[in-house]
Length: 71
Image (tube, rainbow, N blue to C red; front, side, top):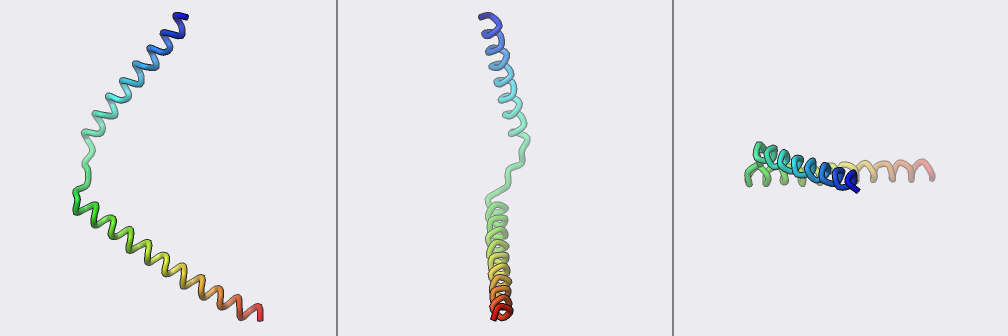
């Protein structure tokens, strides 16, 4: 039974140490500001729409081409 208790204690100690290290590393992170987040979000949304329209256009062209080939 002592081996199990020691294993649990070791696991607990390593978990606590890991969480302490995570906390220290998170303090080093430079978080983006509100304007940077809004700008990045806008870029992602615009890029997503651009890719969607491009893929839709290509799909339409391929659909028409395939329709002409199969007729």
